[in-house]
Length: 364
Ligand code: GLU
Image (cartoon, rainbow, N blue to C red; front, side, top):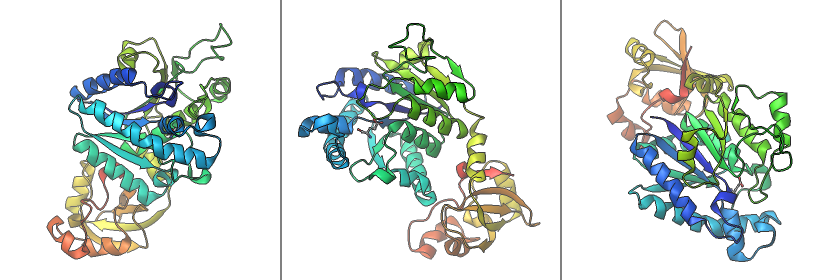
């Protein structure tokens, strides 16, 4: 069983006339349903809103002539795009959920936690999240601009093992395969070095979406340091996931480590803002892989906000773990030592189950 993010590029979803390629999409959704049936957890990152909306509104340059055009096209196309995914997934008895996110939602630590918790909950409920950038409100400064990096960030927030970028190119080639017949496909990349980055510059892009090979390599970098493999593969064929499993296509960028690398990244990139001391029972539970619940906490120090990194210390005062706090310092102090049933009354709002969730915690 794995958690997999599948990104679908605009040129696969939308034909040159600006219509959804529904027949093809149906084959992809069948592949998704099959993988879910065998236990995989799937998250979709779908492009295509701008391309679809541009056609509906009759906008020039595929809706990308100006930021205002792109925003209007995205708002118009997104509703049709979601409907399409929802219909096709429903045909397999699968419920779809839409999440539209901006760069800020995944960079800001609080909102990163929110997105991560929502994804987790949706997956727990057996739903397939369908995600796109919230292009209708995203301005130039806060845009990802391409769904390749968005997919990698979502993979990170969801703790995915694998990110698959379904594209109109069949992976990374030593040169542009449309111009150079000697171009060879790279099967596996262990480390993204100068040579690999150089090849990316020669890569191709259909011109419909916004991500070329450069943004795919950036996505691979993000995924690798988050502990997820990333695959770039052509989605031009029917049943693209079956084709991928059959082998002989695409490029695999290997993760730097396992899920522990993701946690190391998580803890390493941020400054520690506070500390919570826990009882011996909580030390044991955390060592065994559990989340830190308020009941196990004894005292709270420091000024930290939800999403900040805090140290977790045992009764002897030694920090043995570190993670993202689900609560602000004041609230954390309030819920310290309290049982889960008491939290809602104390806080006056629906509580977060954990003080530090195990997915956002690393043992030192
Ligand atoms: N978010 C854009 C859309 O839905 C696509 C971005 C991309 O091409 O990667 O149209």
